[in-house]
Length: 256
View 1 (cartoon, rainbow, N blue to C red):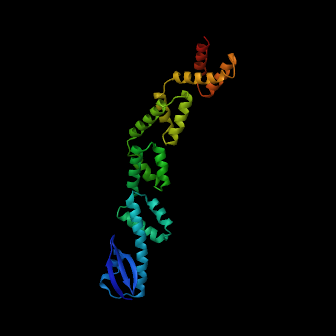
View 2 (cartoon, rainbow, N blue to C red):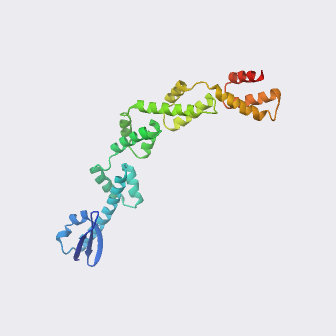
View 3 (cartoon, rainbow, N blue to C red):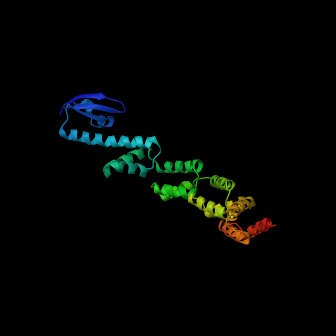
């Protein structure tokens, strides 16, 4: 089989014409098979060239995938599986990317943790679960989590809680505390830290009680009268989580 022409293209590719057949191959294939110094090749070399070209096509796709943004080993493996590449070549590509440090799960883990601490609302449990789902080894995750400054997470949690309290315009402290606790747990923070920070920052807000009282009273007074109105009102406010003592004090105040 005659090599008629080798034409250099961009991006490390070459157009090789063998017996009038054009084959786009990569520089690595040219060098590994010493095609620049050959005029003729046999069927065995030709088959090898085709296989290597296919391999380097997938390798370069994986390389671009990893260079576009930082990837984990598992992410890259799943990407290659979707390309219907055989297991042997997948492992070969993964090993080559690891050898050149393009794939490094420790660095990926460290960068992921830092991004989530500074650029997201996530707490440590959410970060841990997400990394496990990415296929990062548990011991590696714990090693990197142990290196973080936990005061940063604590400060972030406190800011989130203060914001939720400040934006509250209709919930009793009991209901608000429950809502904040559930939300912060879902974000991956520890229950003990959440409860402590809520208790440290949450104050009684009778303005909200009075606002809800007036709104509900105005609606109920159109349907009921006298004690029945206040009894229905009390039930609704209790359901919203307000204290019975605060409700009774306000009812007495309004009845005067």
